[in-house]
Structures are given as C-alpha cells and as structure tokens.
Length: 373
Image (cartoon, rainbow, N blue to C red):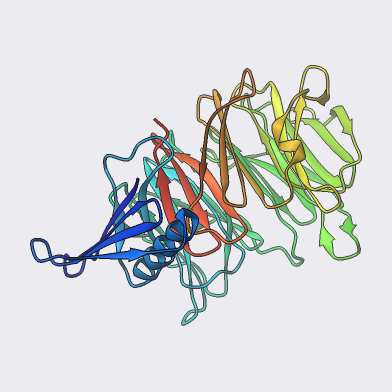
C-alpha cells in the first residue's frame, strides 16, 4: 500500500491518498472533518499514476508532504521547489538543510533558500539580477557556501546579508567551481585559479585555453583532490589533466574517447575520480587514480546523459539517479543495496546527501528528501 498525506501549512487542511491495488482512497479536509471517497482505476499502475498526478496538483498549490516515519526509499519531504524550470538544479547540504533554487521572473533570476526536513523554508539574500545558479558547494568547517551564478563565483556565510564576490563575471559563457576544506578552484577567464579562502591568497593562477565542443559548448571543468594537492581539469575533449598545485606542473594525463566533461569529482578518500561525459555515449565514468584507468564494473557507464550521481560524505555509498529510477550502491563492492522510484520528475533531477536523507531537486519543480534506512 502506498500512503501519502499532504498538509497545507497556510490553513492546516489535509489531502491523503491510500493506493491499494487498482483503488485509491482519498481523504480531504480540515483535521477531524475529512471526507473520504474511493477513486477506482483500471489497474494498479493507473491508480499510482492518478494518485501522483493529484498529489502534484496539491503540491503546486503549496501543500507539503512531511512524512517523519518514512521507510527506506520513501519520501520524507515533498514541496514545490519552483514553478519554472530553467535547467539549473544546484543542490547542497547546508548543515542538514537542503539548498534549493527558484526562478523569479519578476526580478528576473534565481532565488536561493534552505529547506529543513519538515519543509520549513529559510530565504537567503537576493542574488544579483539575471543570474541562475548552476552549482553550489557548502564548506561545513567554514560555514561558507560557494555558488556558481552563471559564470561568476559568489560566497555566503551564515549571518551575511549579502553575497561576497569572489570573481568577476567571465566575458564568455565558460566557468567551473570546486572546493575542498579552505581551498577553491574556479575559472577566471582566461586563467584557472586556486584560492585559499581563509587568507584570500591565490595559490595557483595559470592561463588555460579551452575548446568549444562542436563550435558551441565551452569545455572547462575542474576538481580539487581531498588533500588539496592536485587539480584534475578538462579543457579539451578526450583529456583530463592532473596538475600539482604547489609547482603548477602536470603530474599525469588521462586519455579517453569521451566527448566532453561536464563534471569532475573526487571520492572523499581521493582514490577515484568521477567524471560526467556529455554528448556521444554520455555517461558517468569512474577513474582509478592509482592505475589511471576506468574502474571495472562501474554501474553508471551504461546510463544515458540524464543521470545524476552523488556520494555519501564518508564515501561508502553512491547514489545514481537516471530519469525516475534511483539506485544506491555500496561503493566498495558496487552492489546495489536499494532501488526506488523518484516521484514528480519528468526527465532529470539533481541529487545529494542532506544529513541522513538523500535530497532531490527535479525538473518538474519538486524538492524532496528520501529516507535511506
């Protein structure tokens, strides 16, 4: 049986659905005054589809799913993320709260806010106008949030009433951002820079030209190793370069038939480098940093480009979302330990660990937390 109860925080009214077989039982109204009715459908799949459609119509009106007793694979939280989809789906864990973006066409541009597990919303300061947020990284030790707002890097710390500008807007639509501990790397066109966020000193500042894939898409992505010694970057198709930060010299190169890299991410122990390859046979790749080769048995290699991947903070679990299918893997054995459907998604979503839950932002406009056990 699938049970969902949504509440309108403005007036306390409930909307509940109980799917059992081909029937959906619905209860609506104020607490103690709910009315119950059956909505029989042709088959169980039709019943589930009908219930989710009705549920989404309530979420769009402001109802919130707050399911504290959610079991593994069930949503702990659903609420409306944004009424408009722009393609930007940043996600981050900010001290146990889910970072979300919402496009405001009156500004116009993105607004950022935090959601706790019950769906309570806390707004962050206004962004510069005409900006969309494509990536966000929270550094817990510094209590500092870094965001890539189009092709400029901004920073926010708790208590700040405005964002701190870390880089000027790039003249062309090319950028990247990653951070570890107190270090951050970004592209300040035409240079790749590494900055110590505590002191503000630049530890690396090197010219780095980039390719245009197909003559239209700038290739620029970079990741910092967890020990802060190395940058992995991709500025041309089929090549990932490992650069020593202290000396600025190339340590190694990884070559492959990937067309374009749109994401690079080290595992927390630095043993593996995960890459998202776009165009062609788009997929996530996992490179062993000891052998400089692809990891055998990596499950994401067969997925298409509508895939999102996340690692647990301790690196023991890996979540892979492909369209509406979520799979959780033991990262050491690559065995799938949990699989479930992602609700209220069209084609793609972004995912990330948020405390004990898995956070999800979908292209349909839903922000969710899913229980994992």
